[in-house]
Length: 158
Image (cartoon, rainbow, N blue to C red; front, side):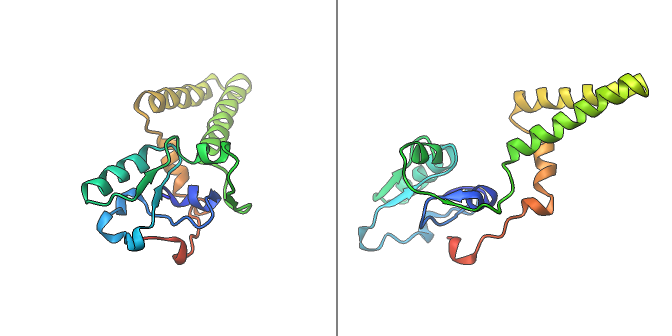
C-alpha cells in the first residue's frame, strides 16, 4: 500500500505492506519468481505514480488498483480494520472547524460581536483549503500524538 501511516493503520488489505510514496524506490522491490505486485493507495493517485516508476525501472509484473482502496472495499474483498485507529483526518477537520464556527457564532451573539471574526477566519480557511487542496488545519491536527499511529516494522516495506 502506498500511503500514509494513519490510512494504513486504520484499514488495509490483508498482507499489504506500507511504503510511503516519499520513500518509494522501485529498485528496493524484489520481483522474485515473477510474483505480481499490486499497488494501491486511498485514491489511486499515489499508486499510479509508483506504477509509472516501476515500469520505468523495467519491472513488468505490476498491477495498479485503479480507484484505490475504496474500489477494493466496494468489490467486497476482505480488509483488516483497526478499531483503535483515530478517526479520519477529514472528519477531524470537520469536527474542529464546525466547533470553532459554532463557538465563534455563540460568543459573537452573546459576548461580543468581535468573536464572529473566528467564524469568518475558519470559513476563509476552508475556502482556501478547497481552492488550493491544502488544509492547514489538517496539517496541524496531523501533528497531534493521537494521529501518530504505530505501524509494526513488519508491515513496512522501506
